[in-house]
Length: 361
Image (cartoon, rainbow, N blue to C red; front, side, top):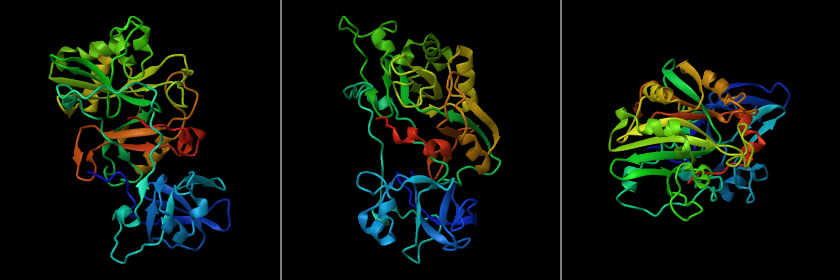
């Protein structure tokens, strides 16, 4: 399984003049654009690439002379910026060892860590661990960055691209002979109590206002989870809960005015369902899904274009966060495990919304 942080040795490609600055060039680094000093690098140069949100130790920041360009209260976080109208993501630095080859991950050599946004702490309480329940409840796939893992999809491989919503990851679980549950990224969440101090029912306001249990109040979701074809030991529906009360992108639901939900994946007895089968189930029960933006052959240029633009969620009047891309048929890759990648939009990366990110537990 891939490391949480990748600091790869890369080859600079497509170096060309910056359109708005005589002393700058732009180039491609994996799936990102970088702005670099004019004439400092040549096509094909090997460099170390520190992606945005890499924590760079002081000794290296001082050696590379970049301390004043780093972000965060400790001035140690690699950032993203627009220079004279051209976006630039991350930092490139000289290769330190002759033996390093393109593709090597040298994060440990530099002692780098990955910056993590603050944990969202007010969206619900974690349920106590229960060894009769929790071993059946799987955490959702850690989706890797498609702009870093550029070789996972083959050119022209048939893929599905869906809009990546800016909310909080949730999961709804039915375990045969045990009951229904709800959780976030890696935790099971306590079922809320109603005003009488007993477990809330789907019609209780306490259930409808609870971030992770709210989807259980949607009749179509309940119908899908009880579909006869899903009479198995464990069924887990993964989705995104969103709205102004969750993140800074509201999708037309102002803070304090309710929640929205879109499903994006389904697991049955430990196996993810192929996207088309999942889509058919959602359609049959009218379960809202994350918007499908594209079906067709993969190409990096196409994914970059799709990652930007307006959100296609009804009621939204803002940019999209990006896209999530998967093959038509589920498959495994040696580098990342399950094949599913995210491509965050350039507009979002440079926006105020990125700075307000919080993280699921």
